[in-house]
Image 1 (cartoon, one colour):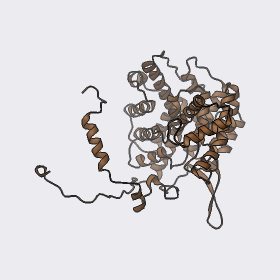
Image 2 (image 1 turned 180 degrees about the vertical axis):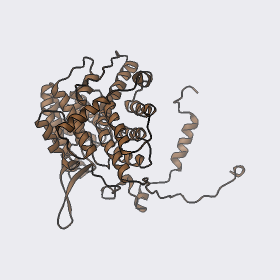
Image 3 (image 1 turned 90 degrees about the horizontal axis):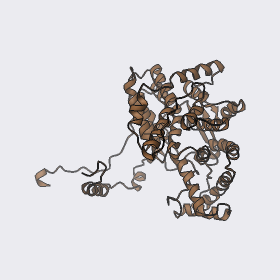
Image 4 (image 1 turned 45 degrees about the vertical axis):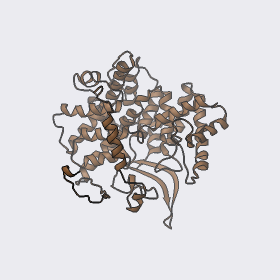
Length: 452
């Protein structure tokens, strides 16, 4: 065989056999009343659990029982995300560590509690001896999410008590992983750049005097430099990506895997595998690539040309021909995504500070035109708006962050929510999560090998 990855004639043949033997068609889900994707026929999520960690509101319930769309609202442990963000931004301080505390312990920390928590995270901000060399530099990969998952699983071997699922041990493991995930992500990227792109290799150690977002930029950039505005905008993005209910794919994965009684490292690796999928964690990359293609295809200063391009996107005539305008629409929100609204308010300052005024104006134009184009083309009247991916993609571009790190940054934020959900599942569930599937294959007679 020429290559371990080679698709042989046998594989091609048998893959075709497998495709042809699949008799399940979309109509059968209606016939058997199966909620594919855990969404009912009206698109409502099928309730599979209870959580105190976060709450999403997108509809108002009227007295007659009718539900009507409203501006999206997101609550972390009962705290409105807008109030949380306004609180630390008003004080001109970083908010991610405070947000992690809130998600894990269900209340806002006072100054002493926050300082003690930050000091604890700093203590854990180191990898085992030779880990970077042996697990990252000696085995570089092209997709950082897989490398990160491998590293998380490898940390199991360095833990003297990896399988203890008591609250205190899982909390200890969670704080360690929250602390080291930025290091693993950045070092994996540096290894990728060196071994696959021929660039110089440099590894910066984290600075104990810096916040998580500051350290990320410090470790990523060759000169280790960043502005306060850059670090605080990245910190804000981390806060807004830290949690989004138990029903998103990776958090639900965390609940499912945790319910089996497995260890923390396996649980986080499973969540990372979920987040890697482009239907979950990679949408902001698509937004930036779509806008770049727009630049290359039409005169972006001509509003009619931009609108025509958006129509071509929906007609599968532009970009990746998927029929989507990336960064618009959401499974839950219809009128507005509260995370997008917050980023929208902050991105203007960053854009003008970094010389991206024209790009910002283009995003504003797309944000205004896209809902109208989608409504006309798709005959949708429930409302559609820009989501968090639309503006986070622009922010990461302005911060000059590489595409390869977009989804890992999502993971660096969301591990806070995963950790909270894992602990909640351990504390409250007790039973393994086992959804039902309906078998639709008729019984077959066994035929002896000599008679086949």
